[in-house]
Image (tube, rainbow, N blue to C red; front, side):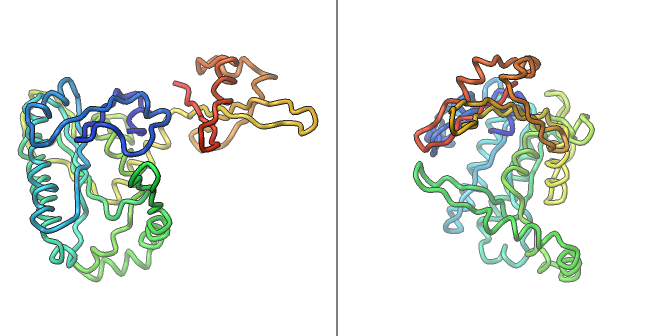
Length: 312
């Protein structure tokens, strides 16, 4: 959702709960939160009414029967409802082939593949199937419990991308599929949003998942594995409009003068610092006044964290 909002899209989250598990902070407070049950096709169609694209990341672990139902049947209902509601593009977050692991939890992968087939059936080449390996990031289990999967996922990703490991994977056949490099949640999100917007992150053209709404369901859904996920995410990052982050520094410990700084990252992630008191005009191109900046940078949440704001 953050990735879509950052690219200027209007975003709605649809779930049975409706409300997010964790507390919402900027920019997620700009999103719409909708409650709908996957078993209610009318409610699903209504929730997706007017949407140009839908991204489904519904998935679960459990018994084989449960996984077939959630990963397969319930996603198929979402896909069918989206097609019936006139949605132009559909993006499904699936899973990479995992060789021998698939025999241990067949319901999980059978459900995933059934959903992939449904994307191709209803959307053809207007659909995109994203197939990452392990996805790492901070998983918010509840308002008070979070699991930092990046502690494991990031080192694994670096190691599994190394030339020796890739070479080994290529010699192991199906067993080599166990060495799929993990992808960060940010990489998967950037790739999904690029597909949902119907743009090729590398050159601004059609992604292969675009096309007019009445173009039919020709072809199969576009499948993106871990390498393309990382390539597209990198291209999106390089082409993104630099963000403006506002925050404060206590300044001189004697006079306690607070200094407002303006931080801008260019496409190469180089930092340029400007004192907004000395150069207030620096914020004008971004539509942020000094007063607005200072009101934002003084906002501190109940955890003691500064609330940052991103200029449009």
